[in-house]
Amino acid sequence: MQDPQSPGSPSPPEKGPAPEGSHEATGTAPLTRRYTFPKEEHLCRKKLIEELFGKQGSSFGVYPLRIVWIKSAAPTTAPPQVLISVSKRTFKRAVDRNRLKRLIREAYRLNKYRLAEQPAGHQVALLGIIFTGKEKSPLALVEKKLISAIQRLIGTPAVTSAPPPAP
Image (tube, rainbow, N blue to C red; front, top):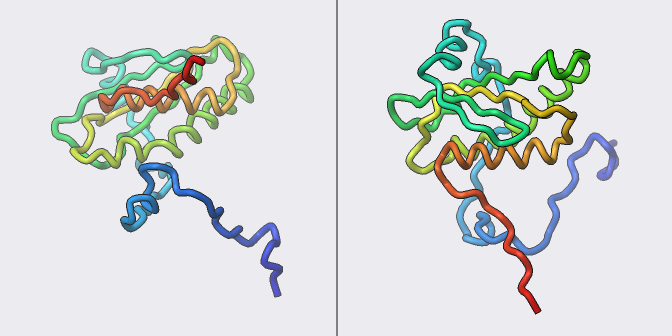
């Protein structure tokens, strides 16, 4: 018999006020998201990588990330193929490069729904995420910058918290 609060069992959902814009607040059925990053979404083909970094690719920077992408022919809701890179010149030790790549993959995996759930679809076919920072960054910073980069890709303004009112 398994204890209801054992580490292997899922904990009950937290109760509280539903955030504004959530499915509970609007009364609609919840949308099931799959937070996965399967092999099919990894950009591995040499020809596509050369195309991404060639003349067809567009890029912009959101420090400590550099985003390189290619526009698709038609809007789609399928996630793009993604390449993640960390410079060997900046981070000599493989353990440091691998940790940063893991952080970027995790941040992308948790936030790729922002691309896929666009009502009219998105225009990103191939996506390269390159870490250009000089120091190791925590997951929170990488995720925040990746979210702002995704919002820039889809053309919506970044959501920022409003400053507190002046007394």
